[in-house]
Image (cartoon, rainbow, N blue to C red; front, side, top):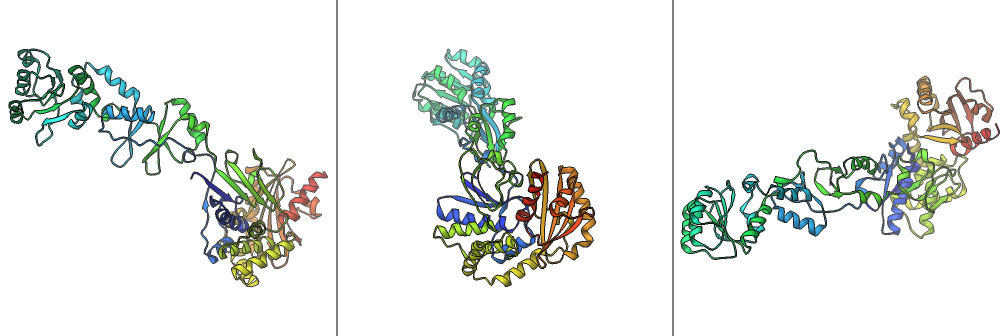
Length: 546
């Protein structure tokens, strides 16, 4: 979608990523002539789904990549043509549109062929084929239009032209020898020649020079069902122009047509264009209807998708193809990491407990009151990220902001938080894969690839039956994704601590960082609630001091 600004959080999105995206899209749409669209990079977890349902908010659309697609480009919008139109009409359209190729479509606007300048010019190489009008099933309407003609007589039915094209520039007796039944005959004003043409069974007589035809000739034509038309052109010009009356269906390319779909990626169509080297290619929509055409020069000035990142600024946590897009803004509360931009951007990074805290204050700073729905979403995100202020990442700003949002959303914070945590922390019915990938973040720390998955729960003991299967899954992840260290944090919301499962060749980093024995692959760290503030910074310090 052109001119859309996509707003999204990190992969495996948590509540803050989703709620911040929705709320900030509302702010952008309220403060400018923009089309801001919240999207997501992964599945919604149970907690977030509870919140969306509670505040009657739609789940953001899922996107897999932001690589440039044909739909992002300003392609040529050239109306396709019907297969029955004449070559003359097709030529006029090409000349007017400065186009060398035009797609041909059926009655449902679906692609059936392509007509090019080379198709049109090749017709004149068949000048010796005087049966071309019959072979191409040319209509009388095309002939009239091409010759700028007028009807002098036409029967009630439209006869098919089955004969050849003849120019009657000889004596009538000689004409009788070359005119066969069904022929198309071009003649002048000689009445004796006109009589011979009709009597020989011609299907069409073309009278040049806009000459009149006598009533006697008309009556003869009625008896023999011979169409008579008049053209202002002379005989030579008429005999040349009539070739342009054949339908494009006869000359167009019908087989092995190369076309693209509007959702095709630019990087994929480049190779096809280089190998085939046609001047332009038709583009169709999801229903195979032609919407325009694309050429190589469209790729030079390609439009990139416009993005706003919330709740993350690390490339591994972001969307596929981000290097092919234009990042306009980043709003985050994590460490500054690896997203690079070609131009200066608006970057707001604050040491608060939630990205939604920052976005709520952007509303307030601009004198804009968020909707009740967005206020509720941001309130829920602050509760989720700060564990209702039990997390060490919590700040006074988070608490003040939460109070203002609760007033707007008319929410009892404690009661809502209890219901939200209850809905979101249950592990019942979840697979180990779902639990592990629900909120996995990957960090590159001084050459070490570290993965930390975190899930809050009110029932750590209920996880015990899954422990062995989880460790096996994590071992596979280490092998497949080359992690140095992979961790799962089961954060106990009630008792303010986290059970840690750890695997990987450098799991001794946990031992060195927290002074614990990791031989059992499972430890409990009291008071450790924040991956962002209490785990990654400490591990980074350990690596720095090694």
